[in-house]
Image (cartoon, rainbow, N blue to C red; front, side):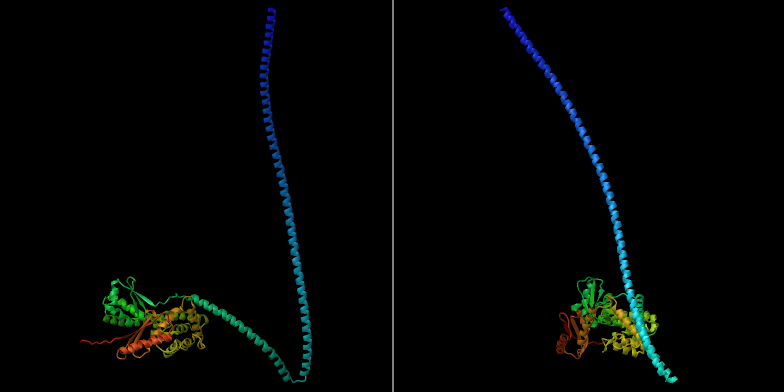
Length: 520
């Protein structure tokens, strides 16, 4: 049993040793495998890194090479394009040169053709002239043969008649050419003179108005102007024929009236009354009469100022006063006195340019509208009235001719009259110088007063309220109360029949009886 046990023990030990060896070897082999695996992995990683680096370098080199090839290719393409463009420009230039040469050749060919035609025409003309010359020679020979039978005196007469016939045509043509040339030069000279004259004299345009404003020291003065039950304002309006407008305008009264003389009298009278402080009907009459005399002196001063400004020397005193009255007259809104002064200067400048009497031209220009000073008082046009007035005071012939012809109604007989007509047209035609609407308005107001004044028993008639009312003052000894009503109806009927007007017109007939005496 012991050997068996020993054998079994030995086998067990052997088996244990073998298993232990195997286990130990397996452990050692596994450790070597892990190490080898780690080394292999490291080698692989290094290889991959190297491959990636090589790949990147290769790609970079390839890109660089591609960029270099592309740049070279672009440069070559650009050079070829430039070369092609240069060639195209050369071809275009050559083409233009060829076109130009072709045009020049066509032009030369056309000129040659035209010259050939001209040569042919000249040749035909020469042939015709030659034929005509041959005929003339034959005619001359025939006439010479006829003349050979004439006496010396008959031959001279025949030759003179021929020469006279030919010269008459040439003289007529020469005269016609010279007339046309003279007309052309005259037109240019006239335009030059007009332009020079207008440059030398320029006057501001002032717009005429139909109202005046009187400034008051305070609004309490308005009540004093109106007076008890309106007697003061009625007295002022009745004496001056001007409408007083007293409204909410602070410290001001508006005077409305188309007649500037009346408006000036009313304005001065009201200013004097306001300054004096005594406002009642008796004082108003006294001040208004005083202002009429003052305005009359003002008119004379205006006439003398105009004569002095124009520089025409001595003028009859009555004409001086009439000239001053033109300060209060308008023609289509243009102040007639300023218009006359302007015409005087314009006519004088033009007269000096053409060698006429400058002073006489100024005189004619200043007086040419003198009839307008009284055309509302005397029957007839201002031309006829002005001519008669100037003739009465022995004005020169040139002045009379200028008055009579400045509107073209009769033919001008003197150069001065033509210059005044031109100056009148220049003054009226300046922009803003005239306004037809204002003149028509004033004429309508004048017609209102004329219609009212022509009736028997009417002392005065005033158009007020901008033409919306006409006040008629009658003589109480000729018109009674009953006749006053009939007169108002008659005037109303005539206004409706003869005038065109907007809205309505009120007709007021005033009959007043006064008794006065003087205590001594």
